[in-house]
Length: 142
Image (cartoon, rainbow, N blue to C red):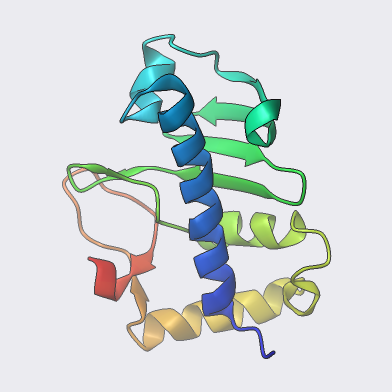
């Protein structure tokens, strides 16, 4: 199987979605950041039975440590909150913290080149929003 950066981006999004789903289901909240701000749960902790070994809310995001990966993501507001955005730094962290799953993408330069190529081709873009974000999204989802 020829793995592409798009495959890794989709896995990153799936992993962020899994973390959000766990919080929404366990705590019956729609906006998980608001749940943290309302002290429904702590800023850091673990949800072992749900598969999260450790989590930490930060600013407008969440880092979730699963058994086989760590996903760190931010929310963007369109104005509804979305968690499917990504940036180069968080993507590199995901690759490094996914064991050997993405061995051929552990070279930062390779990821940077392909990420910039996706921008150039218009596959991903940083949208102009009222609440500015540094995150990129697949253009077909905007």
